Amino acid sequence: MRYSYFFRPLSVGLLLLMAQQVAAQTQAQTQLRPPTPFIGINTTSPTQALDIEGNLRIRAQAGSGTRMMVALPDGTLGVQPMPVPTPPDNLGNHTASQTLYLSSQTLRLRTAADPNHGLMYSANLNSRPVNGPVLFGDEGGVLATAQGGTMLPVITWSNSGRVGVGLNGGNPNATLHVGGTVLVDALAGSGSRVLLTNADGRLTPSTASATALEKLLTMKSGAYFVGPDLDGVYFSPIISFGTTYPTTPVVVCSVSSLRAQHQPLSNDTFTVSVRDCGLTGFQVAVARIGGGGWGQDIQINWVAMPQ
Image (cartoon, rainbow, N blue to C red; front, side):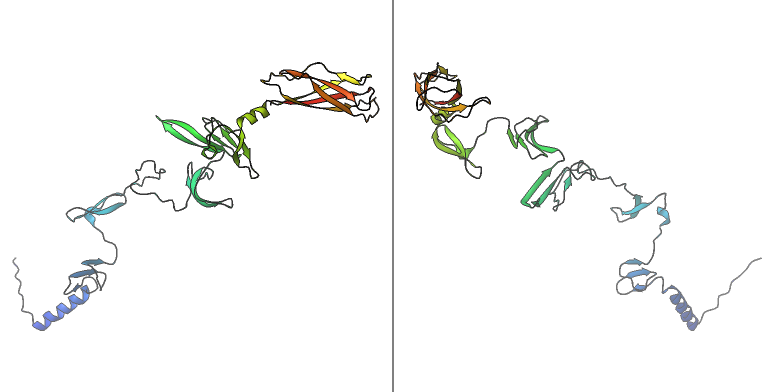
């Protein structure tokens, strides 16, 4: 059986009515806004060439897992897997391409949970003005140089407030412990001189010559004991200096009484004179003022200084 279709011509009024119905159904979904060709989906006021209010689904790009959309060089949209972020590694795998600013924050040298080892900027530290970098550690720290991959300690400090210089990594045993000679430009001058300290502890070179210092260092002193003497005058044997002077030294002596528990208190006074002074020793003569002997022990105190 064959069918045939007969189409009646539509009136102009019917065509206009159909067009109005189609426009009313699609007005909320697609809109062209002349003269700029903006297309809006689910929006009546598109502001871009394609403006979508809601999610966009592209079935051809479906796949497993969460991925991200990328624009290919020809403008085609595609998707690729989301990159897995690399955890921070303390800048170990990075080469700086610009200045690193810490913005007055602390750079912790071990872990985030360890606040005792780091580098920071400080304006004031323990109420003392700094306005500079502070390198700190728990037990102490070391500033070093490196040669061929080997660390060579230069300055060492401890948490007891001691600083060591040139100790090759050893612990400082004093407030300032120097493992070598010390050169102070402010103390430079002609000849060897003696260093003195002023009231605030500053070292200054004195005008005294090294010869005066040598004399002071070679000064000798001692004591010689003498027992009771009934004659009233005592001549000692040679009392040794304990060294040999290049020239005859100046010897000064004094006498003091020594009283044992069984001896009575004595107010005796004595004279002492130096006799036969030489390069290695001297003799003294002791006499009681007022004459007569003495019954207590006496002590001859002496000091010898080269001339």
